Amino acid sequence: ARTEAQFLCHATSLPSSDITDIPLGFRGRPVHFAGERTFNPWTVSIYNDINFTIRNAFEQWSNYIVRYDSTDGRTNPGGNGTNGYMTDLTVTQLDRNDRPLKKYYFKNAYPQSIGGVNLSFNTPDIETFDVTFIYNYFETSEVGGAPGRNENN
Image 1: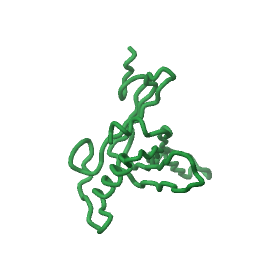
Image 2: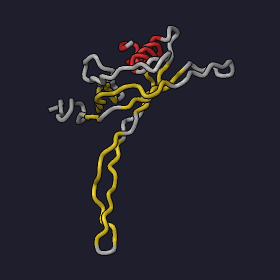
Image 3: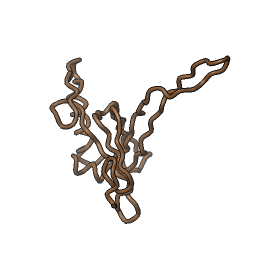
Image 4: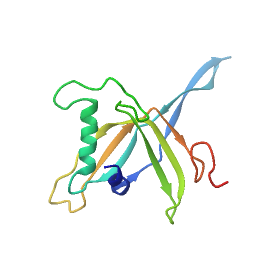
């Protein structure tokens, strides 16, 4: 499913994050300070192939986290390739010549939701569905590079 995902993921957005505002009163007016950073969920739109390869993989992953038929689930989040339910994900923005412009590395990610597939004769389009991921944080490359360094130099 990993190979198919490279070709069937057709849309996403670069991730966003927010820093909360902590206003403190000083001499009758608020003075603002930076608070905690939050990382917003990341959504990927995927073409559904005739064998449901990627959808089946996401449903199996979701069932691994919390079973469909019971309340059993994994208690070890793991991450970074261990036997837990989290893994690292990467999205690469390419230029018109398929050269990497920027990469984002989503650390300790898992699928929060697997969207539905619209089944209708009125919709002649290719089937698609969205997967929304939760992750602990992201790292980013400089242009054309790995996290924290520029590979063009």
